[in-house]
Length: 340
Image: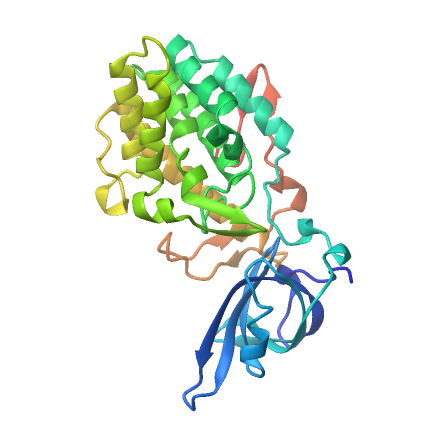
């Protein structure tokens, strides 16, 4: 059975008989004490929740996160959001579908991103910083996982390859701003952009398209994990300057900008200030881009209230081919047109 409809295409009142991946399943009870399943389904375009009122305890056995199921039911609006009222769920053979329909991935080509990563590392002038980046990204398991990891469980860049896409986007902006503002250590700022979220390769795991936190990720968080990993890697590089390591670790420790946002320390250098602004900017622009792609209207339309942005956003309809954010080569300089 091939997948026919994607979540972003569903409309109120539609009868569906299609394949969806289980993201979460929770057994609950009605006020009358009757068990039901509270479900969230997903595919590569998004997610949709909904209840299964009948046979909840039996269905729970097949409603395991990551399982692809045949779902029959109706799309309906509940509290101004679409949901699925599930009538029937059934398992399907793995050979009957392709995971590419259910697992969201970066629109950028992996080979292109890896090539750009090598270019950024090759531009580093400081030999110790360059060696640190080369070692991490080419000689460690963490560096290998980095290339396919999501940048978050949700909100921004929460898809395969999102971490590399996000970090490269930040590195391009960092390079431009380092050239614009006097006195900025470009090598440090670009290294900070590439390494700031390296701990997310350990904080998060992605199993069959379901992104969740690891135990160590919950207990330590990606900032501490990343800082420790960078420190261990630098120790194995003969003569690595202590001051350089301290500044790189400060970039990682402070990139969330404020302690109430999870930063152990606030940015205390010019490079750290810039990095925290760039990180916040890139995350929010990616969120807006995702909202833009879901705008089905041919006219500008207001988004739902976005809690992270604390506002509604006026969305312009964007052609699908503008989603591929490959950097363009112009006079030897890469430019990211989605930000500027």
